[in-house]
Image 1: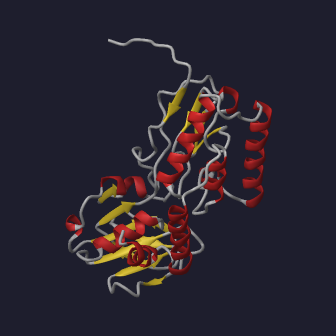
Image 2: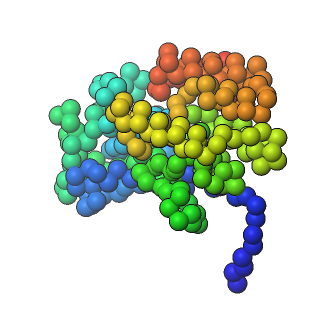
Amino acid sequence: MSSVELFDAVVVCNGHYTQPRLATDIPGIETWPRKQMHSHNYRVPEPFRDQIVVVIGSGPSAVDISREIAMVAKEVHMSSRSPLVKVAKSDKFNNMWQHSKINCVSKDGSISFQDGFSIDADIILHCTGYKLHVPFLKTNGIVSVQDRRIGPLYKHVFAPQLAPRLSFVGIPDRSFPFIIAECQSRWIANALSRKVSLPLEDEMLSEVVKHYEEMKEKGIPEHATHQIGFQIDYIDWMWAQTGMVMEKSIKDMVEYFIHCLMSAGLDGYMDMFSQKYGI
């Protein structure tokens, strides 16, 4: 039995790591006859034993999972569309290679990469992120979801036309989720209790439009709208909205994490970070 209740405000905190986003734009991927799976369903490396695995993606999940399954797999071939990756054999694993974007996959099981390399694979593992999924949200078009952009959202939190009555926690991607979720929650709570004021609707909308225009000028795709990166400016700004500052111990840890990421890259940042903090 369904029921209807009225509330003064809604805070959407359903996360965005439940609806896998697959690399469906690769020619032949939808008819490839062998096993495919998403990192969402990955648990342990054992099912990949003695298999030739292609991992699509170059983010933290792709790197971490590739290193795990390389311990048991016959071969691991990572594929990335990023122009920043170095196409080469891993210096840590004799059975792991980094390739450029996949050119196409064939019904005979073969996979060819744009770097000219071709293999006969057993499994394709998609480490390609997730879709923003809010099927319950009905705002008559005021807020919409398209290609991993949900908006318009002021500072990735408030819907300007409905603020502060509609807000979102945890939308920013490729950053520090737990710290960001905490400071966003504090900001929302203060706005709803009228301890802090938000800018006028037009001012918030104007800033969102400006952000979209800057992305377009820089050639940043729409799906990267909420990828704020591993930086603390956004976090500092968010804390400031509630008249607070980040604890020094947390800020030091975040800054060291960024240092590890910049100096060791995705392939080695966690090793470097763990040596200092034991995480």
